[in-house]
Amino acid sequence: MSTTISIRIDNELENMLDTVSKRSGRPKSEVVREALRRQLSIDSFQQIRNKILPFAESQGLLTDEDIWQKIS
Image (cartoon, rainbow, N blue to C red; front, side):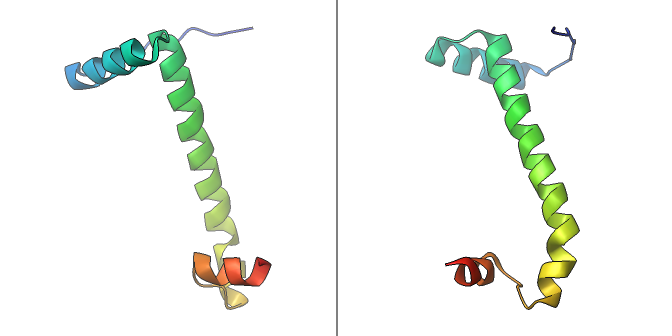
């Protein structure tokens, strides 16, 4: 099952989309779906990170390096 949505984009974004589509040989809709999927994943990760940040800080984990040292 799929849904169709319509969005408005400015000329600059349209030109960028055209360029990526032509260079990759993929349809614009596929490029947009991939970009949207990637952005939504990033947003989800950031929300989770923001929720656990207070718990990490309470354990003395203040930077990404602190976490890597702990799990390595």
